[in-house]
Length: 175
Image 1 (spheres, rainbow, N blue to C red):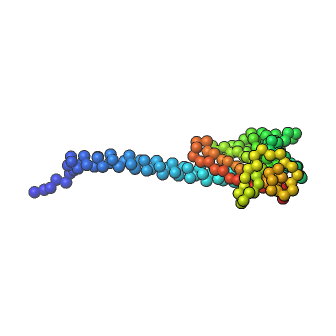
Image 2: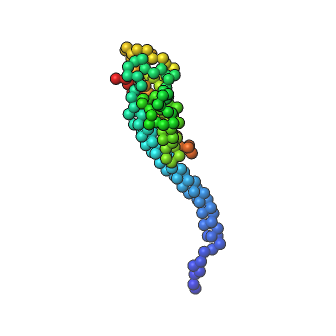
Image 3: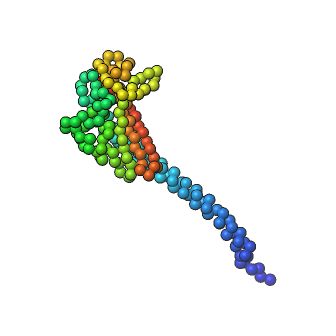
């Protein structure tokens, strides 16, 4: 007698149930892997755009004044005259980037937005602390906030779809 080599209805139902249970799980795993891959790429791109802008800012002078007293915190941003917040080519010191509207600075390819903050800081017990709103005096020891010897530059890059936010900071000195 010959055996039938076909699939029974019970076997067919078992295959459908197994596939029905496994496909949603596999799709969820695949979607998670795709999201993580996109996020990793966005973080790498954001880091590149932050480093690029940070290097551009660090090429500028510490301050528009060549000696203390330095620009007070309230004077950060463009200084008027030939400086224009919409044209970073007119900037001459690091704090001119505060509040810039130059799209060459604020926009980066791939849906990224960039911003720059600058603040006076001082070193207290091996930790950089913000001086807040500071009016600079003549630098003497660089121990007090009003000496204004150090500026912290922070570049923040954010993906417009929320995939990544990267912030880089550096300290620059008058010396």
